[in-house]
Image 1 (cartoon, rainbow, N blue to C red):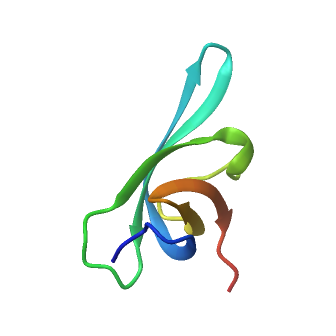
Image 2 (cartoon, rainbow, N blue to C red):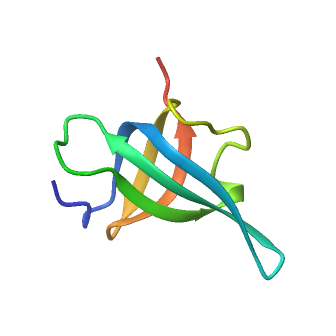
Length: 77
């Protein structure tokens, strides 16, 4: 599956770690994308574009643009 085209995919959080860089807060995230046998998609996203209490095992909707995670939200349903 190519993430080059803008798309939102559903998956399960495999790992999550808060990171502070020069006073800005980010989240290092790995998400096992549903329907994709590939390894978990990984990325660093601004804490403002991610739920504050995200935990391993949470079901999420991840927005990808040009292969980069740009937004994470809790999946509906």
